[in-house]
Structure formats: structure tokens, C-alpha cells
Amino acid sequence: LRVDESKLTAEYFEQLSRESAELCCAIMLSSEERVRQEVAFRSVLEVARRAFPDASLHHFGSTALGFSLANADMDLSISLGSNAYDAYTPAQLVEKLGVVMKNAGMRDVKMLTRARVPIVKIRDAITGIRCDIGFQSKLVLYNTRLLKAYSRIDRRFRELVFIVKYWSKQRNINEPYFGTLSSYCFVLMVIHFLQIRGVLPCLQQIEPQDGQTVPTITIDEANVYFFEDVDTLVSSGKWTCTNTETVGELVVAFFKYFSAEFPYVHGVASVRTGSVLSKEDKGWTKDRQQEMNRSGTVKDRYWLCVEDPFETTNNVGRPVDKETLFEVRGEFIRASKILCSAGGVGTGAADEATL
Ligand code: ATP
Ligand code: MG
Image 1 (tube, rainbow, N blue to C red):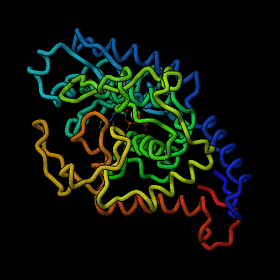
Image 2 (tube, rainbow, N blue to C red; image 1 turned 120 degrees about the horizontal axis):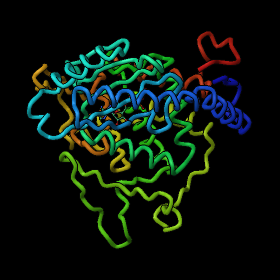
Image 3 (tube, rainbow, N blue to C red; image 1 turned 60 degrees about the vertical axis):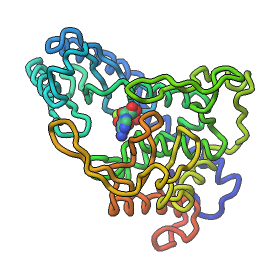
């Protein structure tokens, strides 16, 4: 983003909106890459069935949502008949899958058996597409559907997601393995912000029919209900968007919110309720060591709290600790300063800055 440092005028916001739209076009996945992804999907399924004949394969995450930047990894999840889950630990499933992937000539095969969610990383030999393949719970498919529904409500959401993802990768704070945040976490932070700002509704609180209560649909111990028929949201009077800000204005407001307004110490960003919850009320105050599958333990941390919309005990901001929160928040402040030009950037000599 090229930012004119003079004043936050209407022209400035217009320019920012225009440049945001251009950036999105430039960094988006091409249709040619999408075709290669479909080819890779079919070859992964074919190879996976050599190890697990009843496997079905599901596509989730950014490449399934249309949120991915060029060269994104494809997130894939295998589901099996229930007996397989009794016979193998998650780490053993991943080892078995990794071996067939290697034998089938897939490139760069890595088995991350000790991760919270064990996965196999591969690069498809023919298309060169990189995939993360796991045996995730069905909830990843539901949260992908929820994000998809939000993306169909207002185009400003998708644009803001692209900008925030691009910025987070440029600034090296999109690496959960190294204590910063996943793209999924950033997307939830964007939804939370847009809900507070009146750009997006809270789909999990909208009843299916007037006069009904919000139902409970339980999958893997989570209530996965949300109002999915978003095309009728406005016509049925269930939602009226009151916010007319441009993408440029929202970009500035987003970075300001997570620099100076979000209550990091006591608050939890909650897409499920469309509000900020209290860490205290959720019992999210003390770090906890938790037993994982047989491969080890993980630490639940509560420095930055972003509630998973369905799995409400899951803090998606878990990777962050005291030091990395300082780093992440520092990046929000840096971006906000550049955008608002409050104190100028660096020496203050430059009259343009690159975010
Ligand atoms: P990228 O383009 O950077 O890969 P992405 O949008 O695919 O970004 P990821 O962080 O890779 O985002 O997450 C992919 C999907 O994995 C999410 O849409 C979500 O379904 C699931 N997921 C990731 N992290 C978590 C988490 N901490 N808890 C629950 N589900 C998660
Ligand atoms: Mg991904």
C-alpha cells in the first residue's frame, strides 16, 4: 500500500480503497492455479486410497474459500470409517499416509506427527501444488462454510482479508509454529472487527425463522448452527447493514482497533456472539499444559484471545506468548501509524510510506 502521509482526507481514503482493490487483484490466486489445484486434489485422493480404501477427501481453508494468495498451500482433510480412528493414533495415521505419499512419488513429503493437529505436507509431483493433509475433525469444514457465508454478505470483508493476510505474511507474523498467528486467526479478527463496526451481522445469533429460537446442531460436541441462507438476510429483514465506509476507511479503522482499542488484557474477540467477551468469564486467565494425542502436550496460552466460533474452548490465538504478542501488537501499531501518519514514519522525512 502506498500511503500519502499528509492528511486523512476523502481523497486519501479513495486512493487507499483503489490501491487495496488493485493489490487484491495482484495477489489473488489465478484461475490457472485453481485448475492445477483440482488436478492435485484428485491425485492426493487417489494416493490416499492406497493406504485407506474408504477415504474421502475434503477441501477447506483459504483455497476452498477463495481467500488465498498466489502459491497458497491447499488444506485437505481425509475422513475414514470410524474403525480406523480406533485402530490408529492421529500420529500413526499421518505416518501411514506419509509413506504412501512418498512411495507414490509425491515431493517434499514431511510428516508433522507432533503438531497439535498432525498433518502430512507434500508437493504434488505433476502440478507442483503444495498440500497440508490431515485427519481433522469435521469442524474445519463447518468453520470454512461459516467464513464462506460471511464472505458472501459484503465484498469489503474479502478485500480486508486479502490485505490483512498479505500484510501479516510480509511482516512475518503469520507463523503459528513460531508463536505468531494463523491466517484463520486473522480472518476471525477481521470478522470480529466488521461485526463491531456494523458491516457484518452475527450469523450464529440469527434465528432460522422469525419467532423461533436459535437451534443447537451438535457436531463433535460443538453447536455448528449458523444462519447460512445469506441471500435472504436483507430481504427477510433479518439484517440491515448500517455501515457505508469504504475499504480505505475500514483498513485504517481495523489497524487502529487492534493497536489501541481491543482490550488485550481482559477481552476475548468472539465471532460467535459478535462481541468482546471476558477472559475471566471464560476461565481463560492462566496458561495450561494440556495432554494431546500420545505424541506429547501443548500449552494453552491466553495472551491474545480469539474464540473459535464453534469450538468455544479453543483459543485460536493460542500460539502467542508474552514476547510474540509484543511483536504482533507492535506490527499493528506500526501499520496504524503509517496509515494515520500520526507521528510520521521512521525519520518523518518521507512523505510516502509503504505498509
Ligand atoms: P493460508 O492461505 O495462509 O494457508 P488459510 O485461510 O488457509 O490461510 P489457515 O490458518 O491455513 O488459513 O487455516 C485453514 C483452515 O484450518 C481454517 O479455515 C480452519 O478451518 C482451520 N484452522 C486453522 N487453524 C485452526 C485453529 N487454531 N482452530 C480450528 N481450526 C483451525
Ligand atoms: Mg491454509
